[in-house]
Image (cartoon, rainbow, N blue to C red; front, side, top):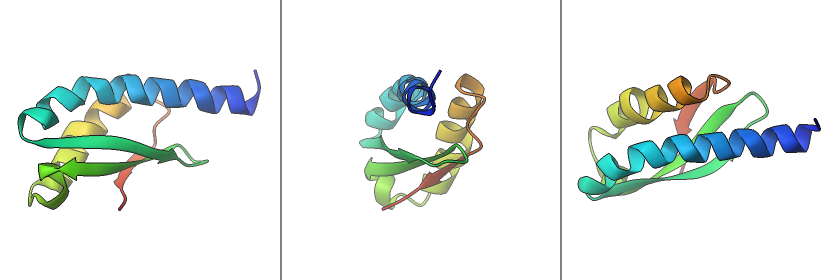
Length: 83
């Protein structure tokens, strides 16, 4: 399998995992967008809507999005919010 194919499969798995958390974020007026996956498997996401300026956004990122991503896609080393 080529590296490009591995990256594409990882991206698909991350997107599928994000689909699992989106409904709860959307219920509170927020959202999340996959921005990039780095070479060391750090997932970069952009929080949207109410999540973007929420004082609890770091907890949402760590305990919500990050926990689900690492559970669903063990290759993920970390999750970071980017602007």
